[in-house]
Length: 328
Ligand SMILES: NC(=O)c1ccc[n+]([C@@H]2O[C@H](COP(=O)([O-])OP(=O)(O)OC[C@H]3O[C@@H](n4cnc5c(N)ncnc54)[C@H](OP(=O)(O)O)[C@@H]3O)[C@@H](O)[C@H]2O)c1
Picture 1 (cartoon, protein in one colour):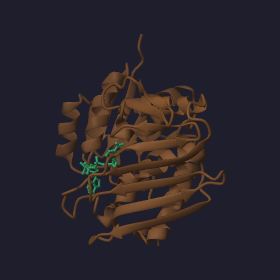
Picture 2 (picture 1 turned 135 degrees about the horizontal axis):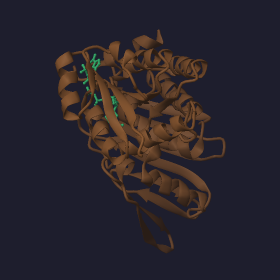
Picture 3 (picture 1 turned 180 degrees about the vertical axis):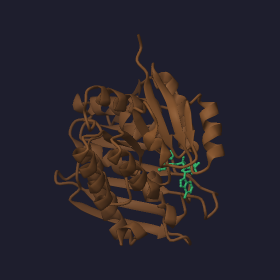
């Protein structure tokens, strides 16, 4: 008989709805409990996804019976507190990106996961998408030769009000942590830790970055050129350059199912993968598989990878002069 995996959700906003809907693609996975700051919102979400329990605060879910893991989907500043509360209660966590506001907080979360022997993973959904697996496979097989660099952007024009979490400094807003993180993560996945980072940003009226450009250099000589923006609809493409060809991840590269390889002397070759739903179930399945094996971290999205990602983001923030209250 198929076993049931009971997910709890903290912060039933936009992404939590998409995540919950995608759980339908995993046999046995279900929304078991949901916690909102407001009981009526939790109740509506629970009804929409047939959850057994709902709570009007984030504390009571920690005592929910038969909970297998919690998905934290609150604004960035909430990730640390929500995640550490779950870990201290011995509840495995999948926490939205960025895992916390800075490296110090990420370190504390990882220490807590290890001390409590409880699973922790950052919900960097692109890491688990079929297109990323294809990309890594093509590179591993040498299809574009030795890597020489990457160029990637993620930008859209946002007309959301200044109070919205994406512009609100008190909620950890800003283009870098919200969407620039995806190109930064792509470069990290390909090249590891950068040895030099340069960045420039336009800081908007709310004190957060609205348009951020980043250049990175790696010990092997590779270069990365990355861009995250709330000010303009960029092409949202990624190019991974090799000495024998280039992989073009078509728009929107972070959620595409197609990519192509082109070179100076050859016709472009198109590659496609299948993706079910929006693709949030791939990361959820990884969590479930790891927990079933008694692991406290994923090999694909390890604690070390999250720590390295946050170190990069901290370095970029130093370059653009973006300091959050959590850094003080
Ligand atoms: N993986 C992806 O593709 C993806 C896409 C979008 C967003 N995200 C990430 O997911 C997280 C949530 O983003 P979202 O777009 O879903 O945001 P959202 O719609 O604003 O939802 C966030 C939820 O957090 C709760 N919350 C707790 N404290 C809050 C506060 N002070 N102000 C506002 N809401 C607060 C709210 O639920 P209650 O008040 O009901 O508790 C709210 O519904 C962020 O970390 C973001 O980076 C990831």
